[in-house]
Image (cartoon, rainbow, N blue to C red; front, side, top):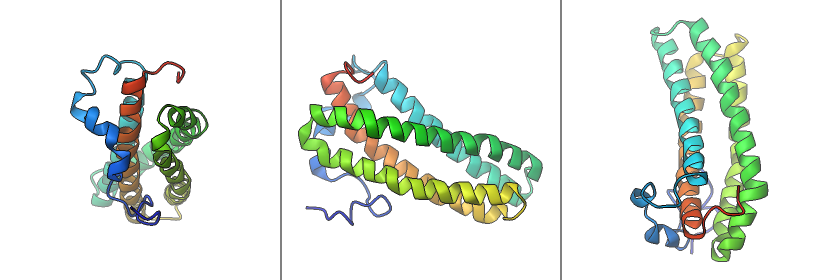
Amino acid sequence: MDSEDDLALGRREGLPDALRALLEAYPRDSWEAHPGFGGLVEFWLERHLMFRKLCAMLREDAEGAVDGRLAPETQQGRLARYGTMLVNELHGHHQIEDHHYFPALSGLEPQLVRGFTLLDGDHHAMDGLLDRFAKAGNAVLQGQGEVGPFREEVLSFEAMLDRHLVDEEELIVPVILKHGAGGLQ
């Protein structure tokens, strides 16, 4: 059995096998062909894709500013707009999951409660990461920080976010495909 420390967001390399049981019955490469994919599952995955794209764009912009390929004012304008969007949208997304989806999905698959608890814990850990990300971004915007260290913050945040999103998708999507989205929307 995995220890809780080994399953912390910054340490784990994926979900334990016990939490991946439904993924075997509903493998990722079959999701789009499943009749229950449209609607909630598709929307959820699109939101996750948006978060990934925002992170990639902010990282690429920071790299462009460091390398001199992107004017600082352009990078800062995009950081102000898209960095704020990323932070606000993630906070809202996590609140809906923690207060609505995770409890409802736990009721559908009680043997996966540990997984939903793990994902909820990720959200709390990500609050600290989002705070660091926002502070580093604000320092750049206020002329009190360099783009290079902000880029490193984005890289760290992006890796943690992706680990969380992959694990969340692999736990939640199979549950929705098995039971349907009724009562979740």
